[in-house]
Structure formats: structure tokens, C-alpha cells
Image (cartoon, rainbow, N blue to C red; front, side, top):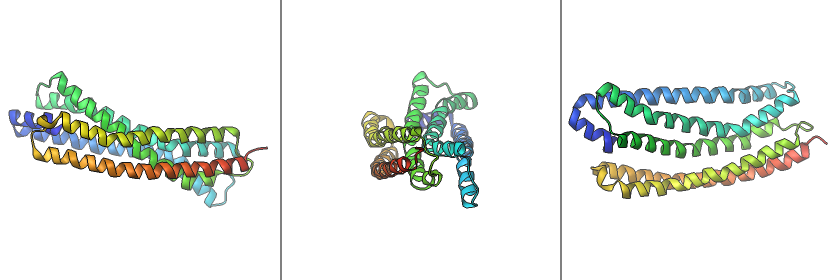
Length: 238
């Protein structure tokens, strides 16, 4: 976005365009990031409260245990949705602010470029929050809420559903380096600077490294869920 749209705009409209764009980026990143963290904390708070109650020896009702187990398994999906939504919402915000503050006329292709690029970023960024949060919850938190006689058949069904979600996120993690490579080929002449090309190459390398991390998390989640299914069957209501 910077090299293809903003740099030519700065050359035509002067330093004010760069100042307004950076100011917009600062507000979007800071308030969007903080807002996303706040929403995630609110969603994760029941889990932390449940763990605190268990640590203090308090008895937790079965219906609340069921809710906490579901929240644990869905927390990764929530984290992915929050991250993706913030990136997607940022797509139209940038060109609208540029048009409003800088008074620079952007073409439809510029709007499409901003929205498409940030939407793609949002989709791929969703991968790692899901895998990390799901690994943490299945490895550390979910077992704390498994109590004999409190598990129902639907618990195993939800575990199976979460297990199937792993595949789509692994596919996204694997597709990221390929997308970066394709962008490098398609936008090669439009990038306009060696720095942009190097930066794109670095993102490609990070994408490959990230894929191996995603693969490890993928396998760890698979092992965790297999253990949790066995424990759920042992603790299920007869």
C-alpha cells in the first residue's frame, strides 16, 4: 500500500500527505489493537475466573463447567475473528481518511487495492491467534474443567468440531508464502523500490517460518484433543 499508493501520492501532494497517512495509521493501529485486546480479555475473563475458583477450592456447578469448557474451545476462534475483523475494517478506513484529510482523489483501483490487501492480511493474521489460543486452552486450561460426572456427549462433539478447524488454519498458514511470492511477481514493476522488494521477500521468509510453527501447533492440538476425548469419555455421565 505504501509503495504502490502512498509514495506516488506523497510525491504529488507533498509532506502533508505523508503526515496525515502516518497519523491515520497510528490511530487505526493503536485504537484497533487496544480495542481488540479489550474484547479478547472480556471473552477470556470467565476462564480466568473459573481457574481462580478452582485454585481456591470452590465448587463449580456443572452447567458452568460446561460453559467454561465450551469457552475454552471457542477462544481461539474468537481470537481469529477479532483479528480478521479489525484488519478488514481497516481496509476502507485508510482510503477514506486519505480522501477526507489529504483531499487526494483516489481511484476505484486504489480503494480495491487497500481493501483487498488488508482483507488478505486479516485472513492470514487470523491463523496464528487461533492456533496459539487453541493450543493453550487444550493443553493447559480445558483439563482443569474436566470433572467426573460433568461431561456430556456434546463435549466430545465440540472437541471433534474444533479438531476439524485446525485444517483450514494450517492451509492458510501454508498459503501465505505462496501469496507473497505471487504478489512479488505480479507487483514487481509497481513496487518501485528495492526496499519494497526486500521487504516482500522478508515477509515470504517469515511466512515459511510461520508455517513450520503452525505445523507444530497443528500437531500439538491434535494430540491434546485426542487426550481430552479419552478423558471426556472416562468422565462422562453414565
